[in-house]
Image 1 (cartoon, rainbow, N blue to C red):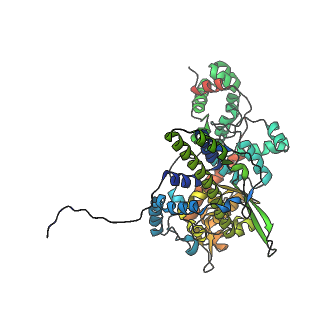
Image 2 (cartoon, one colour):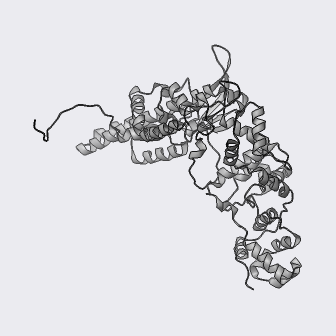
Image 3 (cartoon, rainbow, N blue to C red):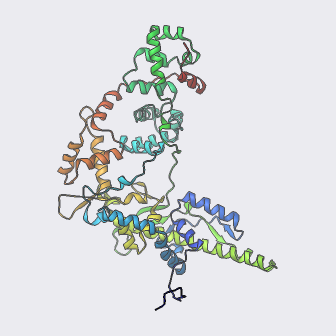
Length: 511
């Protein structure tokens, strides 16, 4: 028997991931802003694509013209998704081996990893921090609307330069209501956020340290003298001696004039929903149901200019010119079909999410069911990675507010009733409500929250309560007790100064 190199012929089937297929799957996870940018780029590079201003209204799930999307595109997308999701699958299998997957059906172990354990250690944005705090602090819808309006005025340093009268007029509220909400926003950590001036920002930080005495108030009222180095006038106005003044100036330099820069900065922008959900009667059974439609304002409106294509083909003499026009025509057709399939897939996934989370839309977050990507993938016959891409950066406007589709996926916690599980998001919501209604002088400890939840039939460990509380940026009971004592004592400094004087004031005067 001879061993040596040889040629062997064999046939096998493989999936070729063409650039077009990769592009089609990539489009699934684009937000409407990213999609609009991509479409604008395609319009500039492809002369056969034409933008249209069709105003036919929202695309409904039963009336959508995209339901007739070519099956070859749908089959190609379905076949290509697993190829791009190989890395996702490896992570999912590892996560499942640890006991983290399938929680929606069997409940999660207390020691099983939670999705929060896999959040990267990256700097939180100022916008997300403020929005989380607003959700915790304000339960009244009107106050929350005012708070969100004021949050839109935050700059990178954490200051809010809006005029209270302008805000009141824009949201049709009273000036007193704006000032009351603004005062509560200034109690958000870190101290100094939502200040209108440097003096107000520094005053909030000094109040948190219990150092805002009359002498410090006088110093903050005369920051222009600090910047100018007028120590004699400062001593007289603050009624202190040289040593006290030096200590006060030294403490002033330890404060943070830009508390917002502790976070990544991204402007708070209103969310434009991709889908609308409205209550509707089932025409056949007459029962209450839901109607889903795509937001046409968030959809690109493009079509293939076939007349221009015919004109170009008639005028093309060289083979290279004809090949270029044919390639552009094929690319334009593929893009239009892909956009149609994208819309169909979003509707399909959203419809199944609404069906499985029907209780949430009827009764609120307490009825939110445990749900994982696999549940939707099985029901819609899509790959899990496809469902993940479809639900990323997509928002649905419902009678209960605007939510990202990812919001409806939540792990499970066991209840005392056999076979019953509750979603972790509903437990987080319950913790927020318990903390929001507590006595500031006697805040609830984590152990007490555990006892209250167990009294409601929810089995949960103390470390899980602590993890959820920290993820929601809720301080510990000791910290909340301290903040409760300081909250009412924070004085508001009112001396406005220029940015140039502010920068000089922080550097400290020379002796």
